[in-house]
Amino acid sequence: MVPAFLRQVPLFRKFDEAQLEALAGAVVERRFAKGELIILAEAEGDALFVIEQGQVKVGLIHEDGREVILSFLGPGEVFGELSLLDGKPRSATVTANAPTQLSMLRRGDFLRLLAEMPQIAVALLEELAARLRRTDQQLEGLALFNVASRLAKTLLRLALERGVEVPEGYALETPPTHQQLANMTGSTRETVSRVLKQLESQGYIARREGQILILRDEG
Image (tube, rainbow, N blue to C red; front, side, top):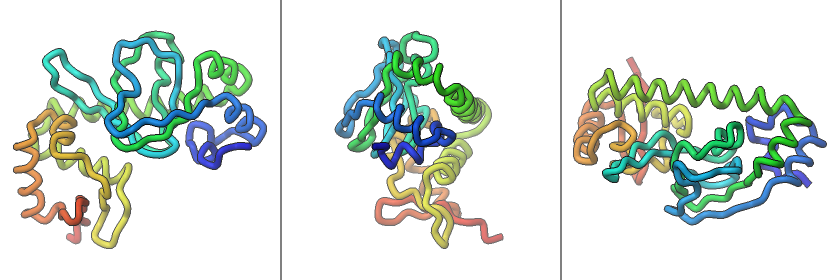
């Protein structure tokens, strides 16, 4: 029987029922507690992960302990695909940002499915291209914009990717912490707190009950 969530994964959207059944027979379910390490950068990797429930944080840890957060991924998204394709060590560290349930596909099973279902290669290329664009935009923002601009762009991107549309605009129901936003924008927690207050006083965002609202421009 095909798990319902697999039908909703963009990577497998072109699969027919028989192909989905073959995929379901190859995946192994894994669960991780919040804060638990899933993938360590530079470690050997032989599996692709599909997020069924929860959220993961993808980042890089510098030798001095500083963290750069590349992205947050949620249900239906995949990670670990690069090592599946080239067999090289992991390129980033992935940690559960909430209690998370994953479906894991080993490299051998993936290559077998790839031979049988070539459309998965096209879907993977589309996914990799989208991530490359997001990374390019993030690097451009770090190089060209001040902290306020970088933070505003990051909040807007998160709102469009993960926000819930509400009458006032978009709501981030589980927004990143101030430290996580700092790690995403190349700033500090104190600076992020100050800029968030500025954005709120200027009417760009509102904060309530643990949410961040990105307000519509009524002009």
